[in-house]
Image (cartoon, rainbow, N blue to C red; front, side, top):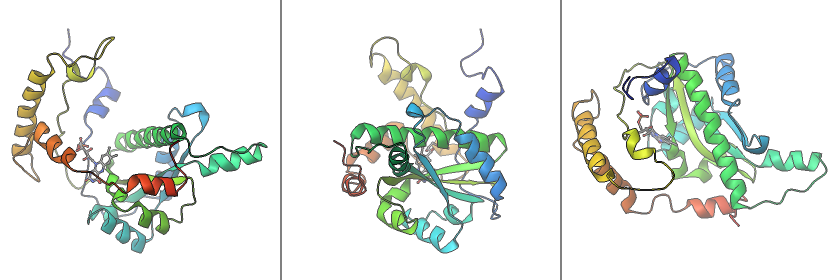
Length: 252
Ligand SMILES: Cc1cc2nc3c(=O)[nH]c(=O)nc-3n(C[C@H](O)[C@H](O)[C@H](O)COP(=O)(O)O)c2cc1C
């Protein structure tokens, strides 16, 4: 029997070789190349064929610098071959609805979930397409540090919100793959049970501690549970609820 850590084919192998890239050749990717990548992203499944995704490629250097500031100074936002902002877009849905002779009821939590999931699936498909070409990527959730600035810069209408940014480009670094939780922790059968999980997580802590200690850049003394404790202690981006409500995602 082959080990669960042995990818059964080239697609699995590609997926398991993912690592975020934060250093890029500072050359723009061609419009055609980015279009191909986004086009493949759009083939992801989409809830009820809603296709609630809009992608804004930001090429204006001033806008990229402003977004990098919002994101806490992540400079690769400015240098990557392409920087895309992936938006959950219910405004196109609203317009389509009007064209079809209807009137969209907005503000439902379900619509927010559908649109956000649609964006994530399309983006991740695009990521795989890009990685299959040897390009590197880094998602940028930190645009939500100040999503209003990003919405203003990109002139987003109501019912559209920026979910995350995405850097894509030719990598100039070759970082190690970050180990994930064992599949045994994540994959359950029939019911939710955390039985036996603590030992596996403790073992994963040691794996990740070793990864952080020995990786080629940004070494640190930490492990998964310590990272989770640090990340979840305080309230993160508490402005999101009011921001979303203001854009028409009232969450009824
Ligand atoms: C939605 C999302 C937002 C992210 N935001 C950032 C970010 O703002 N900056 C960054 O450097 N990495 C960001 N990341 C990358 C994660 O930190 C990274 O995927 C995770 O640590 C696992 O590492 P790996 O991608 O190298 O396997 C983000 C990832 C996701 C999925």
